[in-house]
Amino acid sequence: MSFIREGELTFIERFFANILKAGPMPKHVAFIMDGNRRYAQKCHVERQEGHSQGFEKLAETLRWCLNLGIREVTVYAFSIENFKRSKEEVDGLMDLARQKFSRLLEEQCFLNVCFAYTSRHEICNAVREMAWGVEQGLLEPSDVSESLLEKCLYTSNSPDPDLLIRTSGEVRLSDFLLWQTSHSCLVFQSVLWPEYSFWNLCEAILRYQMNSSALQKARASYMDERKRQQMAKDQAYVRKKLQQEGTASHEDPVHQQNLLQQYTAMREERIQAFLQALEQKRVDFLDRLCTASA
Ligand code: FPP
Ligand code: MG
Image 1 (spheres, rainbow, N blue to C red):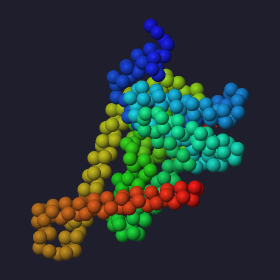
Image 2 (image 1 turned 90 degrees about the vertical axis):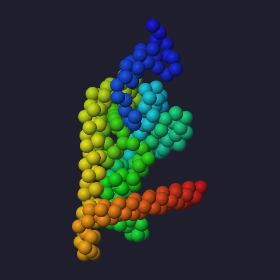
Image 3 (image 1 turned 45 degrees about the vertical axis):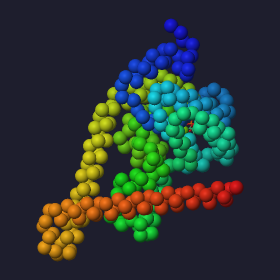
Image 4 (image 1 turned 135 degrees about the vertical axis):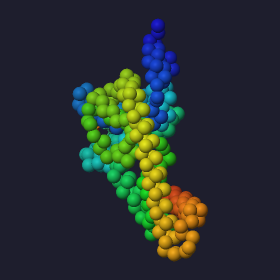
């Protein structure tokens, strides 16, 4: 048996990876990479070195994820709260990001880097975007729903994470993906981020596997309930409209069904137009930002 590395994993790691892959695997994993400074203190090195090793660990973890067939990873690289740290540390983290981001792009998986992010800020922004849509006449107030809010989040192009891992023994989410993790498996591990190992990742995946069927069921039943509630809301709206019109046909179920279809199709059209306008608004904002910083 050889323990020399082949590809990215040793023989024993590959053996274990194959056993894990026989079970349900998370498709999307989120990380709160915590413990860089405690690691630096423990090893008697500079803080910046702790962050730098944290970055190296991220690159290594991405390769493990690829080997395990996990194609999407989201990381909490910098919280808005982190701006409260010393100028020296913030500048150091910004430098690290500037120097190293491009290296991360070389990894062949979807990597979402949450930088200057908090979840409450993201949700609040989504609410503001919907209010803007109503103000512009693109949306009706009744179009505002959980599913529309979700489409206004920065993560709207990604499925929710199946598994969220936080290192360093802290057992809180620190304002990270609060909306997106309501049906995710949350795993808190005591290891400091720069010391994270392949085996820590396997342990977290095992914990996901032990809970995955309950998580899937909870997610599916929540989605069914959400659809049912939307349908009930639409039906109530159509009934009210017909009663207001006072036409003789308001009791006719076929007429009601037709109106319901028209109403939902019109809402869908409004939402699509709003989402396109929102996309354009975001592109314009980024353009202005780039022009201003050029
Ligand atoms: C948490 O440890 C880590 C951070 C605030 C920074 C996370 C960034 C990296 C791991 C580097 C990745 C960089 C890029 C460019 C994506 P901490 O500073 O809170 O340490 P502590 O919990 O021990 O105090
Ligand atoms: Mg910390």
